Image (tube, rainbow, N blue to C red; front, side, top):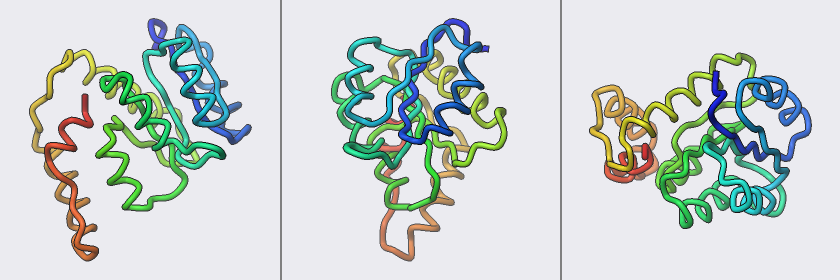
Amino acid sequence: MFKEISILLVDDNKDTQEYMSFLLQEECKELILAYDGIEGISKFKKYKPDLIITDLNMPQMNGITMSKKIKKIDFNQPIILLTGYGDLSELQEAINVGLNAFISKPIENIEIVVNAINTVLHNRKKVNGFIPNVNNEDINTIEIINDILQDRNEYIDYPAYIESTN
């Protein structure tokens, strides 16, 4: 499935770590585990993984803060965010940071994880460091999120969303 890539999984929940390890261990070149954002940054620097999957809420440093620090080192680093709830302000912040995909927890279907990883890896290869064109599906997603945020006088900026797909 992902035999040619290494994945850094950052999550403080032991059950999620075990479940994701079970799903991904045999499917990727290397699976690296970290239990919080601080350890995640350390292992990112040490191993330079091809993909990072991180939880949002963790002790010491959450997934968004960790992702900001990693994106300062390598903006093109693909990162998928795991989240157990849908706080729209955090979703907007994650998009603006440049996270590439979101997976809702609990993860009940491996296909959701596989599809997210495939999409992120495909987009990474496709754009090869360039900002991709926004397609109609992306615009529809942005418009739906903007409709939800409209009542709060917030919005998602299209250029920030475009950059987040790198």
